[in-house]
Image 1 (cartoon, helix red, strand yellow):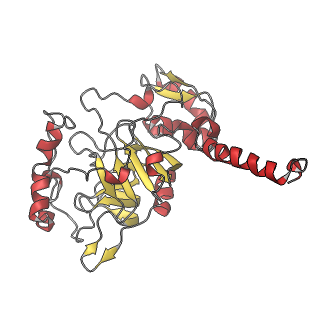
Image 2 (cartoon, helix red, strand yellow):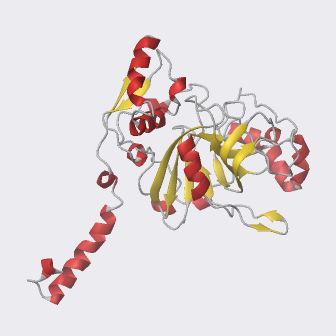
Image 3 (cartoon, one colour):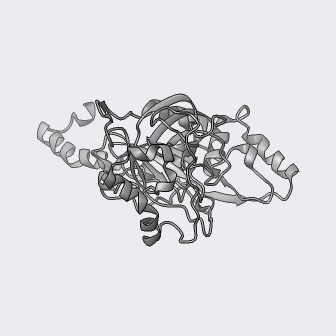
Length: 330
């Protein structure tokens, strides 16, 4: 208050009216949060050179550098290979939002308490609270025969340590289911650096644990889970399984931001899921209208140019573990 002591009360009020909105607006400008960070791409011709390079990135030596490198490359250190591209920043910042491909402020989500936005193309997701980015995460989504489909979902239930109903050898810490019938979920699992899952969204341990505590489950009534009542999940695009370009390795700086976020995320169409991904022993849970939608989903996705016309989807096998509709893929 001493700064304004030489001004009258009316002058102080006028200054506040003029500059306070500008202050609030500035908090949503990308450049305010983080500096420009440039990227370069490295390739090592042999294992010896690669191993020497990676010595500076082991978590016990420098956890921040480890988290940045693995997040940018969407893979664990054990999957780095000679003669494969590695993207490296010129600056290492603990807050991984500095490397986000999503905008720091999402105007369309300003009235949504919590929102998860996933990009298959950039193998990443963002968590927003009332439109402000609170988390940026590198992921590995579904492979070509069991892809992660674009559209609207929501979180349903969580499990600290999940054993898959499709294969009991698949153990998945920090599971968050976001589709009841096909078992799609966020969870920790191995991260090879490309779409590799059975429709699930794989994460590093640190991110899976954070999401486990941050997300909100769906509400329940006498009929079961209330649809779309958990934290909303919007998957905004589809990976190009024809060219298989890893666009996250082609970025030149952190200034790039995805510019095709839906204007109103809560109006995004419910995801179209082909019927073959629903386990045969769960299809009876679909209403006639839902069954028809699932039945024609593949044709619709191909007609829209989302699914390649020559792709062959892998049908889901019957459940090995009978636990109602609390299934989980990997």
